[in-house]
Image (cartoon, rainbow, N blue to C red; front, side, top):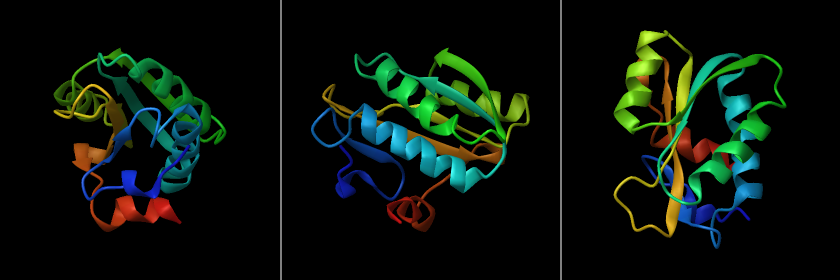
Length: 128
């Protein structure tokens, strides 16, 4: 499921699995592949129960674009994701997390090259 309300100004976030589930995560992966077009991305996830399933679905969607390679960081923090983007000079990265929100929430923080957050109008482009 993919509820339009999950697209926020600074991230993609909603209640799992009511507003965001693995099927939605896969579609978001496909949209991110179109957004980034090509390159290498760091992927990480937090310790929430739903994060590893969303992470796998996100990778599945991203993998449909053969112009990508991934640095699969696994279970990490968001600052670690940003560090790895810069350390390995990747095209960007995606963190599966709902940050400070309750445990029934989950989502994605997306960053471009230089660990610059994707936000505002760029996030809202995913709706198209």
